[in-house]
Image (tube, rainbow, N blue to C red; front, side):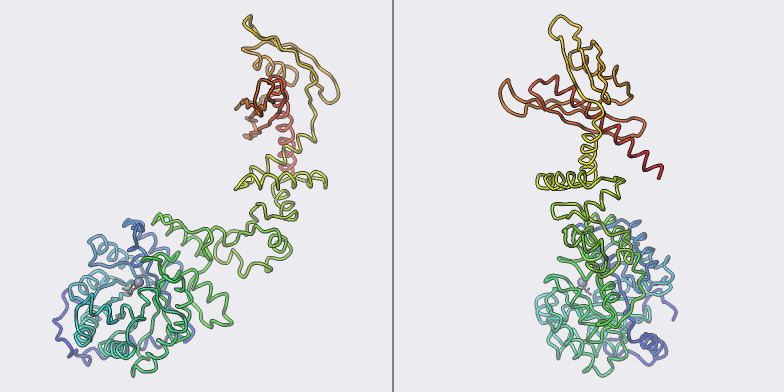
Length: 547
Ligand code: KIV
Ligand code: ZN
């Protein structure tokens, strides 16, 4: 059908269906040609998602998201609400021009100006759709529209007919359908289909319904509207009571074959049904949800990240399918099961939704088996005793520290190795300090069983000690940090010294701590311990590189 620049004037209630009989029949035939188990995925991230507070996207971001959704196999992309702003109009129009496969849809209220603006925006699309809606619940009709039910019925006929002047694919929504009297809802749907609507959406606008109730509404409407088979029915659920996905799936059982949803479930208030959740539920539970979608599910994780970045809306850690913990296991029992066989605790593979792999998160609930596996993945081969010791110290650390990172585990194991490979030890130290510089240090070290002594001066006693160490154990490591803490109070306090050395060649750093009532002895010990650690670490890295 050609798209007029200006719509024809519409004579309300006496829509000339006959004139359009051919195109209406074609659209309906298309609707019927959808196999019974195929569920059409209608993504409204760019409209219902974007209209929630704080989720605004730039023009470029909208195009990027639209391109991605099309590539991912989304059937219909609701690109915006063209009357809302010039920006929205431009974005819908640009998306309409660039997409080739997905239907591009623009939203409009019942007013003629609204519908025409939506029609203008989508008119260049390869597959345009106008989605027009009006409230049908008595609460909305009375308090928001301030109309009578009869007036609203007339508006439905007019709005659908007006939209049909722009394109053959017209969706009509009964806003607040789930709080609408069922008898009246049936009359509304009947009117919309007679006027030419090819998709009927019955939204749970306020997230109020329950799965059984939603199922029953679809069943009743489809059974009692005479020509209900001429349109595809659609679900659109908000998540105010956390039931958006469950309600959407119940709607399918009631005969709906289109799901309106958003990436990450973003949307008004508590959001909309999450696309990734409905798609993966259908994929995973084919035994009780006998449907298919055309979504390339391995792109879901990237879609989530893209939308999160574009909207600056973080994804909650425990979000189903795409949350960062969705494939992370911390409890010892679960980790043990996962190591033996992933199906023990995973109902789908992370790869199937685009997550690279399951992660065993190390924390206080982790068991020995997981710790051992982690250590191995990090390139360590520890004997039974060393492993047991490292595991015990890891558990102590978990009690003190909320987040235990790989670096913490590495430090902990390196420390163990440094003690095991304690090649160099401090034997004796004499320091001359005070106002009559230069300060000097006479140091004796045990290097692999042999004693070596030297004397050095420096800019202060600590500098003198470190210079003496360099003479006895020549090395390139760079001192990055030197810190002294008094562990207890008083002048006889234990001094705890931290030394961080960087291996400039390997690009790695190690930190060592030593305590002694003499700050200078603690300094020498900490430096030597750091050197031992660095040597052990270098040995491990070289062994790893050699395979
Ligand atoms: O929630 C709702 O009712 C809507 C309509 C505009 C479809 O978003
Ligand atoms: Zn909505």
